[in-house]
Image (cartoon, rainbow, N blue to C red):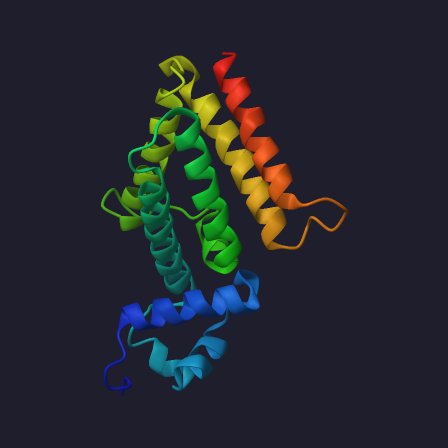
Length: 187
């Protein structure tokens, strides 16, 4: 018998919080059941398996990330849009490393998968940034992959405590944005 009031969305949200707290790789059904105050078999009334929870977390994370970057970029263009996207992206990853980890390599289950739609919206935001630099369509994939790699790399390193040497990572992040801006203007 499922716990009264417990929904699939509750299970996914609790899984997302748990992934942020203990790390995505440490997410387990037993821990999730404990967090929700139910026995592990009760979770299967709401989700098929751990992979189902992980996919739900990826959808939640990508939806939240989409909202964050769109809100940050609203009304901005050029360098301001680039910086707004980068800062919102990094802030999300640092605040929600487990959720974000769920999105990396997550596969779409069907053409109507909500993960596909939210991923497209994040990608559309990146395309909007690049359109401000007049990136030709033939170079768009390369530019998108480069931006994602730079933002993902910096944010993931910061979230995992990877910047332990001297110097303020904020200064480095601002330097990276200026570096990217100059590179995009030079194309």
